[in-house]
Amino acid sequence: MRCSICGSARLSPVGELTSGERAFERLRLRFGRPGFLKPRPVFEASRARACRDCGALFPFLTEYDRRELDAAADGLIEVEDAAAQYHGPSDSPG
Image (cartoon, rainbow, N blue to C red; front, top):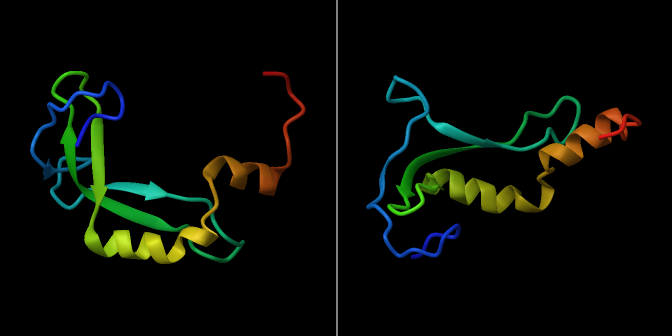
């Protein structure tokens, strides 16, 4: 495996990934809500590798969440698309 940022092969071993001080707080990958009353699809990343040359971090989903993501992939909405879909395009410059 190589770093997708700098191309280095010097990646760390897989480590535990947390997003807070408590062990159960994990990074989450969230997508746009597929409908008004439907929950936002959320997938948990609990492991990661880091590039030892540029510092890029590569999180990995849990096996359960990877399967859930695969099953839901065709219906996922990008966060930017969700904002445009529900609020319309912005008329402001920039």
